Length: 292
Image (cartoon, rainbow, N blue to C red; front, side, top):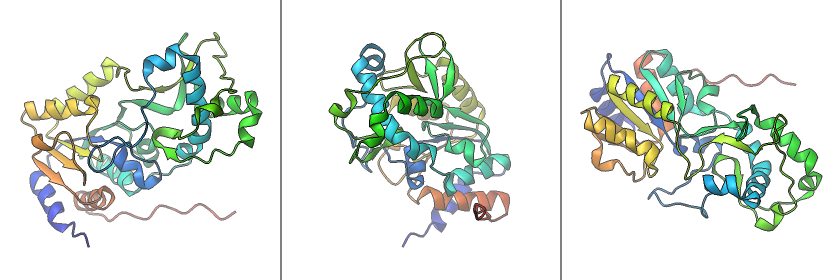
């Protein structure tokens, strides 16, 4: 049985009432909301090679494959609910303890839990962007357009397993008939408003996070193996600045050698206890939906 008390005391001893936290989250924080992680506890990739940014832009077959798999996988992300860890971070922000929350996830669960000072480092899956004219549209609109253009999709039995970020494991042959809608404004290529592997995080996001870390007292990383440089760079920056780096992750991370403190308690449990300690108030259970 896990005894989180000692780890909570270690964390509280490192922090004080004046501590200003920047929090960096990864896929592990959304796992109990039903969204799979990319890697195992050893940091090893669990799936076939991910779609690359350049391939999505240059290869129509890659876009067919992506949107077919996303048509099946998007509802799982759309309907996922924030968990205790998301809500605890929102409570910590409301109490003034979290200056900025930086997430590598694209599920928007932090915002739905009530956090407002959030940088979506890798973008957001609930929005679609035209590569040509830059017009944004809702992901749910794309879902309806895909269904209207491909009535055969609803009749297919994918027999597939979920992957992270609204993806599904499907045979490539299932995508060959998929008609991919183009931008309604200019006819350009539509892509999810996310940073694919091989893509570049917008400079303004990186700058805003770096500035926040310079002003913060502690960088807390939750549920990330930090194998991708876009998140790991901030751990290196905090370490270079002499700021304490706290890792809350039961598995190996790329930043373990840099950490001031490594914690292994499940993030939902420890973050809720931390929020209780900081606010002096125990969390109330989320309201149940009204009976229909």
